[in-house]
Length: 189
Figure 1 (tube, rainbow, N blue to C red):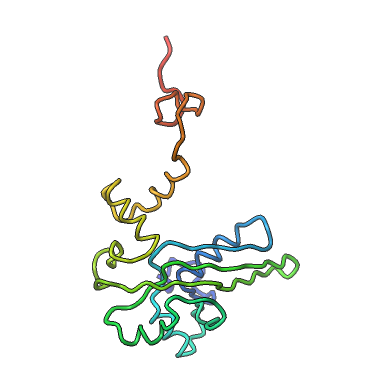
Figure 2: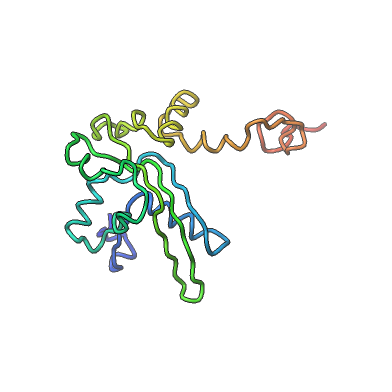
């Protein structure tokens, strides 16, 4: 953990950020351009109550989109009231952010433009947090990965296959025409 003696940065200031915001910063920091938009659709981000509790308690080591509440489109628009009445929590489903980098100041600003929360429909203590029952694009990939790979958490593999749709293996792809990758593995002689 953070306080573990093996942690070489244990004396560093600890700042935690909400799940989708962390994805947005990770993507924006790698962009070759200084302004843009990041779309996060992993389907099961931070819980609304975690973000709300941190904001209401003025937690100084936790940052979330709720700092910009009222400045972006939120679905459902009455998320605060719904979360107070629901048995289970609500989670980030899809989020859209805009970013602007200032290279001279070595700084980047990210602001949420859109966020959709999805209600948990099963107890979050399940082995997969009830992910396959979530109503989000990321959960759709999870259901597909369960069918294709037999693993609800192989979503990244399904997403990785998407660019190959319609690809025809013609032997010039470096796989010898067999579709297995890695070049022609036949031995000569």
